[in-house]
Length: 318
Image (tube, rainbow, N blue to C red; front, side):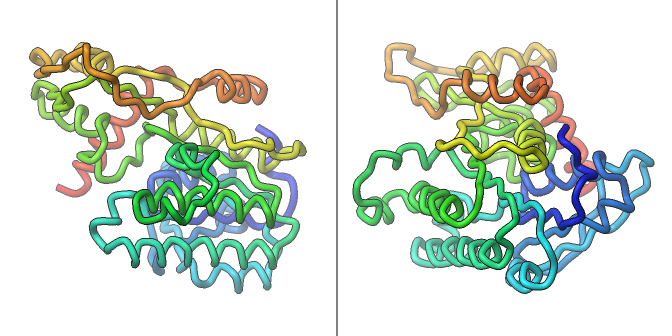
């Protein structure tokens, strides 16, 4: 890990209560310890609150303050920001919850706040956790034509471009994600499989065709972010697809069923149908992790860590 103790500027995490934000704060707690963490780390989300610490090595739980994102530009103008990990964004499922126009407005507002903050902090290095959904827009001439059909992908692509124009920005495109701070697990194949596994139920695959997903562990991604933020290299010219393992969901279901000794999988997959793919080739990402001495979690470890997080979440909310 490149020197997390070097420099005196602040480390900012946006989307601090989300999956990647919680992962980043957890890893920073382990890296920095309480004194340095509370002195140097600033967490932002949609509103003011506190969250419980999860990663201090002394095992003592402390309350971490989270400020509203609207206060970030003021902080950037007042104090030196050394690094910014940007993970705040309304994900795809919010389109139906709030309506497409509000969805577009809120997400562009988030991007505007971060851009204004970076303009006030020209020395800050930035990592953006983006999405594989943006990759489909890489060669599209007119993005606005696709905005209503795919607001999430278009807005993510826009955000990538805007941040890269303002600051030295590393863009990590997440596809399918694993890790201990999964939110709304029933919305994800891995989460749904593990909820059933933890209940001792057979995994059910509802898709009629083969489904192939590219998985990356949230902890691996944020540790790559830290290495780059505290390093010296310039950001790559192109976004990095953060995929360490490509897997067909039936094979993942078999692995989980074996790990948890579940009844037979319920599935009616027709292998003659065209597969549903959301993935990218892992080679470039794995090469970058290797160059930074980061060993990616195995697929089995990704599954077990995700399950551990779901079990803790279920226990704490019951």
